[in-house]
Amino acid sequence: MRHKKAGRQFGRDTSSRRAMLRNLTANLITHERIETTDAKAKELRRVAERLITKATRLGKVAYTAQSELSAADKARRLHAERLVSSYVPRFGVKADGTKVDVVEKVMLDLSKRFEGRPGGYTRIIKLGNRRGDNAPMVYIEFIDAAPVTDKQAPEEPAAAVTAEPTTAASASAETASTASSGETASNE
Image (cartoon, rainbow, N blue to C red):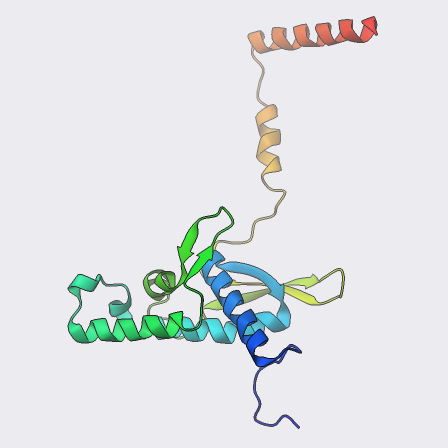
């Protein structure tokens, strides 16, 4: 019986499970929205929110410049930074190839964004089941992230661009191009 044994095991040993959660946490902080399975997202929520809470408990000390802090506040901030960095890798890479300092983002950006909020920094959005193994897939994102956009939305403005009114010069150019294409078709 698994009494008093909280948490999912994912069929992995401890080091593999911890590595998976560390990388998922770093990716969530870097990209602010990731797609994963439902069970992994629910475990990830526990881990990520605990790290953000470590930073938000510092209050303004988390995002104030080092030169303006007292010695005691510098020590508190350093301790919180080391607790966060002991769990997540220091740097993450965005899709465009830029490096992001994950610990700095937690301390400066996320602690400021979620200041005064008593937990609940993430949201899970259900997507449906994965095609290969029917696993329930979800988005996990920070609550103040931009809304999910459809991948085909950029094609609509391109269609609007082609529907512009034609001028006399462009109309004559179009007739000339169709005439020349008609000549090449008749030559074949």
